Length: 383
Ligand SMILES: NC(=O)c1ccc[n+]([C@@H]2O[C@H](COP(=O)([O-])OP(=O)(O)OC[C@H]3O[C@@H](n4cnc5c(N)ncnc54)[C@H](OP(=O)(O)O)[C@@H]3O)[C@@H](O)[C@H]2O)c1
Image 1 (tube, helix red, strand yellow):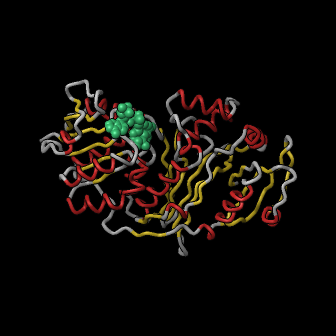
Image 2 (cartoon, helix red, strand yellow):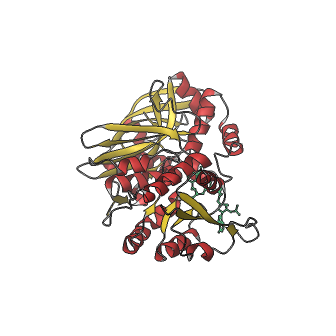
Image 3 (spheres, helix red, strand yellow):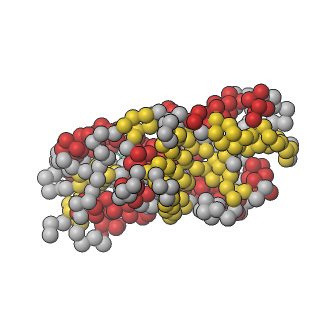
């Protein structure tokens, strides 16, 4: 049988791990690696991307560079030259997934991105092979923030020390803002909704709160109340419309979420028969992520590869449809008619006020917190 010939773009954390795993594959061959000028110092490497993109011997391009440009240009060129593409790039698929998928369909090649959501967890492939319509998706989709919160909870590290440890362990990037403010989780949620429900949800309509405003005092209070905090994504297709948001959430100590520690992820989906499926594992890191790239490559060999369907829907999230309970930390003297309207109980802890709010429309909660933050330090979590 002919081996699958692979061209690899990028040789960082994911690219190196892909190259390592490919050495063990009998049915695949790493044909070439594209690196920046001056870094292509092995015979298998080139600094001319067209050596791979235009090479008739190459069947698949694996993009592991990250960023939008030039990754987008390279992927487009690869597809136009009849090559399948596998990418781990969630930002790129969020920005150009629809266009590139349409192009792939017209060129009769596959565009696959299992590693872009869930790192090493086969979250997207499991949803693709699920035959009953999916109604809900979500979970802990960001390893960096989970690592930080876990270190604060179990080892009592401060937020800044936990972040430094995440960076020195290679989990957080030098600029961790996309992880901390929930954008990375939002990208993954949007891909899960695209795969699970064949709908691109307008990014602007997804309410997103990360852990950038989480403080050491919050973890102390949650611990005293016997809760753990997790950054969670929630997506749902209801009869009235879509719900999609990212929020810190308080979970019971015995829950699967609470037991998701270090940089692990927990992904789940629910079908229309209310059957729930949960997958947990390494959400990031070179080898776990590369294993999802290999899964995509294998499915090409087995000809079970997928792309998104040719007709994708587009919709907005309407988070007014979803009402949740929240815990919010504010200064003691903060006055807000909105908070007063929904507050059930409040408690002073170490000089700050924690209020429990009941049945708050999700979009209104996010909007009010943005307004309050113009002048106040505020953090909130779903309960
Ligand atoms: N790391 C993870 O755990 C993980 C998990 C899931 C998905 N992903 C996704 O995987 C992709 C790669 O992430 P990574 O962590 O492997 O990043 P990385 O360690 O920064 O590696 C990126 C590689 O691409 C190369 N590169 C970037 N721009 C280039 C350009 N214009 N021309 C040539 N080479 C270029 C870099 O070269 P230089 O070293 O010369 O800059 C580096 O070798 C991203 O889309 C990321 O979102 C990563």
